[in-house]
Amino acid sequence: MTQWHHYWLSITPRERRLLMLAGSALVLAACYFLLWQPWQQRSEQWQRTLVREQQTVSWLRQQAPRIAQAAAPSTSPAAESRHVSLPVLISQSSSRYGLKATRLQPQGNQVAVTLERIDFTLLMQWLGEMEQSGVNVLQLDVNAVDGAPGRVDISKLVMERANES
Image (tube, rainbow, N blue to C red):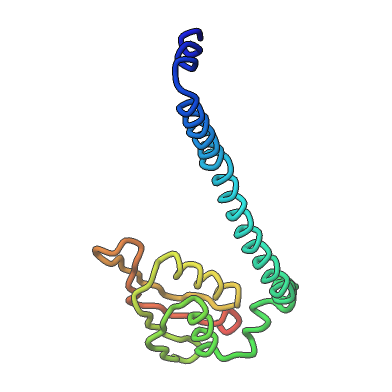
């Protein structure tokens, strides 16, 4: 410490003021860049997050009636589907799942369905919904698509209402 003290006394008063000014500027710059600027950036980020979350809450409040309506136990899918013809029911439900029925061929009580290439998981979910709606799958031939994992071709799909068998 005595070295610094001797050095301080050995320099001119003008140099002392210059070093004090430079030291003060360095301390202020360090405070700004190490404390103030990161705090301001976090504050702005928190504000953006708050606005985004408020928008989400507002959207959820707008959707609450629709969510409540969807969650309300109305009539079962099977009861609703009895009033619709089987080809129309297949067409409507497949479009909800994003499946494209390229051909629906009624054959008495049954309908032969031709679908475009689809995801296997989506097909199983759709068939599950159809079963809940009172539609049975009589025949289903599925072939995996080479080079497209999870995608399948339906070579044969025949469906029938459960109460018409």
